[in-house]
Length: 499
Ligand code: NAD
Image (cartoon, rainbow, N blue to C red; front, top):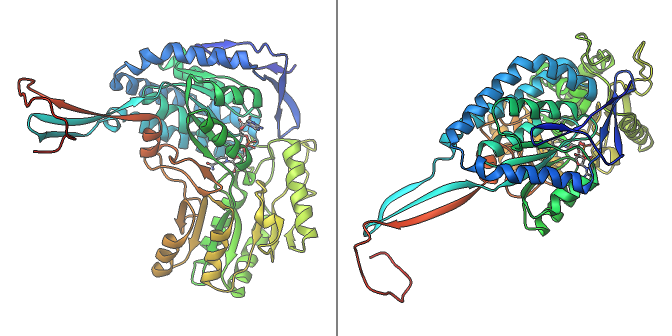
């Protein structure tokens, strides 16, 4: 029997009333696993109203009390991590160990949020003028909302709601309708950790609920992570409705390999970063850029057998290195791109299109694919494929290798593999990309730094988590005070200046 999922509002599971549902699949078997209700405008407004009711009390709860909830939440995630990882793997298709790793990266943001009393400390200047002190404080915004993608159903919501709630806001999360069970469970754990009902609400839905969040005047800020066209729409719509917005979009991440690099290390990095999570990561490496034909050949020699022998199988099998893609629709899209690459004249060195997992023939599997001789005018280079497809674009020299990511529409992550410190430093300075790795293929900043790309990979001024997360979810107030009040200088009509 197919499970019917729910929303989580005001500290309770609430049944969907729209009569509209999205399908949640088990990608390994291809079976329909659950139906997720798609909220109406009114249902979304009810979630906003619950968050609004909880907002004042939570904003006035001391930072240390809010931190204690985060400590408890951290403990609850640790206690439940195995259950959460399997649940995530069953709906997303990434292997359980990888699912667990992604939860741990989210957990690190919880740990960061545990330090909120320190993070919210304002600035103070005493005696800026006669009897005058000046100090700043960071106040919460009120009700804020997050809209998240399918590929990280635990980590990306945790990037957002942990920092927002620790800062004293209340939150409405609209997770991906493709794998909503983990976000629902996280919300239960947050309330179990001691957050009052209404502090974290989950409303499942599609464009109707997203549009309600983007336009409702009670919602003060929108954090979005997903594809670029939707990020642009979210950014423009929410900003036009007077909200603070951060909207992260798609990616095409290059890894440059200079001739002096350790080729074994570079090949290992390309395999992990290209095919881990079946390429469904916004920081996946999808373009390898060897500098010089000798480098290209040295890499190909190592990559080809590794891609051919990738262990692709059920996401819950501990032997699997790579599971299926999230949906049949996404599988068709990825296969379509591989066909397109062949039509465009790229050299398909490893063809995973016909891969079938034995006993799971209806699963959404595709084998690893490797293209060589991809050029920058091809669509498979310009567009995000979001699958286990690595394209090799050969560059004749360093300048050309740097030009490729710099000219690309996206600017999320980039990496360079080399033993030459000079070249690496120049690359890090000149790359028009938000996150740069030097001999690190997936340079995702840790929780106490901020995550965000450039160009069409991110819209808005503030990145996710770290110091930018705290800035995004708070507004700055600066107080100028004079004590004692006994000092009188009479009415002054000129602009106050320091005397
Ligand atoms: P998506 O854009 O399809 O969906 C993201 C969210 O937007 C979901 O909650 C979805 O319900 C909602 N949505 C979809 N269509 C909408 C519409 N027309 N109007 C309003 N809301 C809509 O993205 P996805 O397929 O779930 O996730 C994959 C994408 O996310 C990839 O492009 C990937 O690169 C990107 N991503 C980026 C980052 C980053 O930090 N830059 C991180 C993870 C994923």
